[in-house]
Length: 470
Ligand code: BG6
Image (cartoon, rainbow, N blue to C red; front, side, top):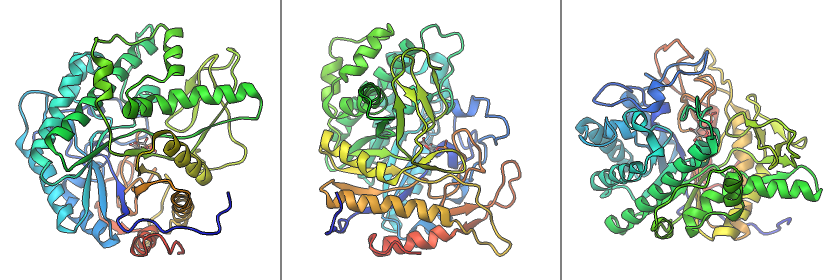
């Protein structure tokens, strides 16, 4: 629809940006923190270890001051489970509790609402050694961790996110360093059993949040990309429905309605991968009731029918994705790509928001969206990232259109507030508004510089999204 009348964004729209603990903090095995699975993985060749990252652990005051200068209304960050509970359960690390308490206070000092992700790809290594999410015990271990966070931060944190990109943990865990399938005979059985436990953990954590913190709001944070059919051939449409169900709706149907998506259920039956359940599980799932949906969006996906003769596999969170006899990845010829090969699709963002709202009717907040690029710091300390401004501008335009069409949007938190280490493509794949002066292996001085996008976003926030020019 071409709109002739646009509505403004709500006055309390939560402008901000996001980070995650293991990608930004550093201090990964100090100050009482136990290792997470990210700390014991073999990092992809040519990329940095995670011991320093952007050194947010030691720079958080400076970084939050810069976010305040941009006018942030919210800052989305995650709590590292193994910084709070070095073994995943048992003794609490007081220094860890204090660190996030300080981060929260620092945000509040500037009127920035903390938006806390409980779990972002960094399961404590001690739990992984016992079998991680494949064990039923993992449900209560997560709920115990959630309870500790509610007890310590619930007086100040109003917005919570449960699990970052649970769908990517299930679909591309090997690429983002969260799972190892060596020696596994039926990967679907393993992955969807883990997924079932995470869904239960999420539902219980949401219920507990409502019981312990009546004024707080909580929601999931999957990566949602509408899946297009490669053509109007009916079989391509079926393939797109298959991937939509497997990639997107499984996670939201369960979080919001407490039910397994029927197409996914069939897919699991076909692969002998129906999860083992206890008798009350579906009751527990129904008791979750998110207050909103957080979602990460980078691009859409496109698939065609697969007759069983294609090649199976996924490249990463946005690239590729094929399942024999279910769907086959298709490069959309209508879209440009980033330097890292991710398709760019602002209109698809609007289509995704429309579709999500029509399915779930809950307010939504964008918890990630952004452009990874090889930014260059000039000799006079500038970063001319007009490509990032262009990407973000075109996505914000689509939020405004979606809002005009009646979609309830609570806020926008692009990835990322400051430069950090990518899931598998290192420090050189930068996303931040704030440049961190280090290279892949040379730590330099870790000084912070304001990119051109910093000044642009400041103005966007100041005008509540009405002025998107640079
Ligand atoms: C999301 C993750 O998948 O995308 C982030 O939640 C990640 O952790 C972001 O960094 C960008 O992906 P990448 O692979 O470029 O780091």
